[in-house]
Length: 245
Image (cartoon, rainbow, N blue to C red; front, side, top):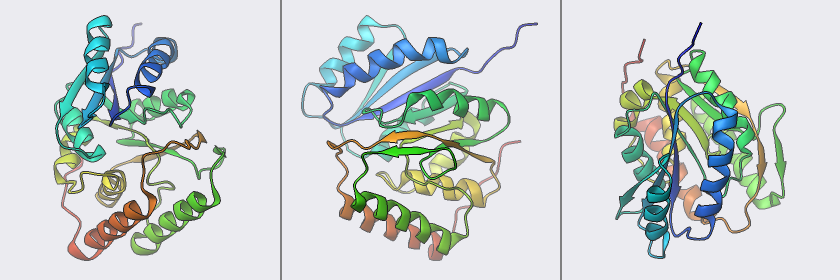
């Protein structure tokens, strides 16, 4: 008996990643056909790059039939994911960071979680079985403090809001993403909070994560934006979203 598997889009948001992008795509193209039985497509979401990233996107998409790209002039990871996910016809929509800080061996478990009935699957660096390498004390304290603040405000059950490794069903993206206000790093947290509070099924997947010393995240600015977003959702009201059956 043949079992059909939904198609998967793997979105890679990029901003000035001319060096990391070819390496990332090469690793994914080698890994994905062996790791999942699903038809897949790698979608590079270039949001405002000013180096050769766009040229490389074009070169890769012309060379490989399983690679596509979209271009946004405005920056913002959340903005890039909104466009890529909402315009996709794939059954499963995912994303990961171009530096592949999260070990991609956890990716099949996320896909399976969605095939088994979850609406959202997320990588967790804080779940039992997860491993984190080379993380600075400052980033460790910031991450744990941020997740503790979320739990204090929302009594949520998901363990890691901002690991750049997530997947959703297409129906879930269509239901939730139009209601996500933030276009930057808080997109992840807002997505998870809306999903959990509106009864969507979430599944955390423990991951192996290695800190990237060349990260583009400006920690204090991001923290300030995230805290502002948390208070907006807590005191401004959570949008009403109908869960897919």
